[in-house]
Length: 135
Image (cartoon, rainbow, N blue to C red; front, side, top):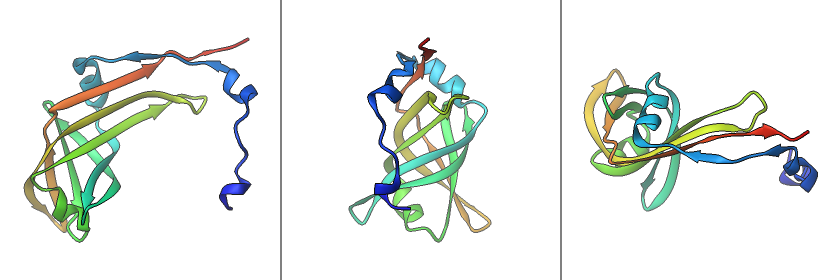
């Protein structure tokens, strides 16, 4: 499949739902992250941006995650400012909420062949959708 094989969205597709977003406060964002799950870490390695999927858990207000010790990003992340993002899609496939955190990723050592990090939650932002189907 190539990009030309992907159907383009039409105005009719966009009009099927009325979507608005509510900005979430810090506490609401952290509450959404409390169960842990799947997210993405964005950083730079050799001056190039990279975005890597991670499993995460929360420790207080900090995001804990691991990366393979063999990954180049694991060597670049420690002590650096990185971005973290996660969210959830609704049953209709549209995004239900999204949370982003920016902070310093402190290395915590190795677990097996993985490096563990603690991301401080210096900047937290997020939103949730208030989608309503249009009749």
